[in-house]
Amino acid sequence: MFKKIFGALTGDKQENQNYEAQTSNEKYEDDYENNYREVEYDPETLHGTHYTVDDFDAEVAKRAEAWIADERANGENLDEKDIQNIYFNYRRTVYTEWNNCDSDQMIRFEHANSLKYSGIQTSGFVKVEDNNPFLEPVHGVDLKTYTAMCLKISAGIDYLEVCKAMGFEPVIWEELNTIWPQRMGEDTSFTVTTLFGQYYAENVTVPQLENLKAEISEEGATNLEKIKTDRYFYEELAGARQAAYEYGIDGAQWILENFGINLADFQSVAMQWMTEQNQNWNSEDIIKFSNYQQEKQKEYAAKFAAEQGGNIADDVNF
Image 1 (tube, one colour):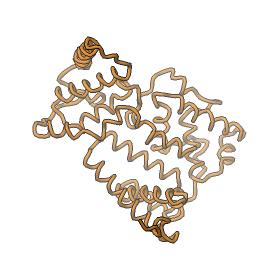
Image 2 (spheres, rainbow, N blue to C red; image 1 turned 60 degrees about the vertical axis):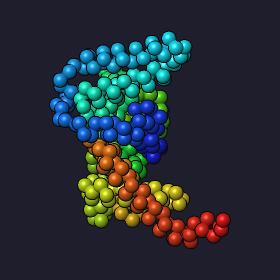
Image 3 (cartoon, rainbow, N blue to C red; image 1 turned 180 degrees about the horizontal axis):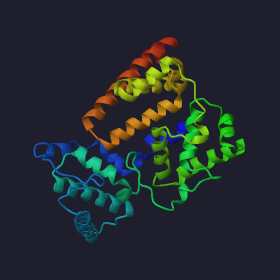
Image 4 (tube, rainbow, N blue to C red; image 1 turned 90 degrees about the vertical axis):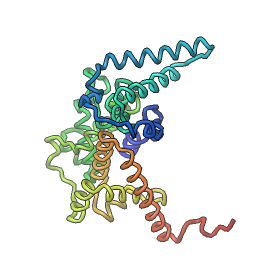
């Protein structure tokens, strides 16, 4: 269940146009890298302070609606997705023009305003609206408490012990662990999923669970601190874990057995790195660390293949 939830945080949202466009911004770099200048940005919206948000939205709407009117005059039948894409592209154009910025800054802006402009939450920029029905407590357990329980269980503490500490029967946990993931699937804004990930990254706890401690070796504690501060070490273990799964090995268990880091702690650190990346988007660093993880994944894949007697395809001649 926890792996599926984190899959949603790191993969399922890729279908949204806001995420599709992040990996193809070279043209913006070419156009603006020689003209980049410092601009003062609002710390919350990341709009330039030399204009108002209303003026920005009005300019985007003016250009987008003119394009839409022209397309329709030429007989084009635009659907809702077409219109959203037109607005999306003009939003990028206007933001880049008005701030004379590079593509990394533009992506940071999109992250900061993802809920407003695309209806999707981005890790590191979670905005919670009042009276959100998806965040209503279940059996008196809110999302933060549910996340704290998930952390303890994925750290290796028996769910019965967690239920006992919380003071309710195991059947309540079963309902919690059905309803909260169900809400994550139903919430098209990804508020519940993203907030769950944020709480996970914060390693939240509640008073009832503070005395439940997962066992961790001295080596595990050292490695855990290292993946929090050493991005290369984290990417290496992430690559190793993925390679393990591809060879039929439980990657989370392999990390625990070889480095002493349990699933909860590893996922918490993964969310911390993802949030930091979203908040301080830097294309060069992202490519660098992605390439490094892939290199390590190949190295560990070769190691696992050797341990299993080689790949099946090694004996096939073409």
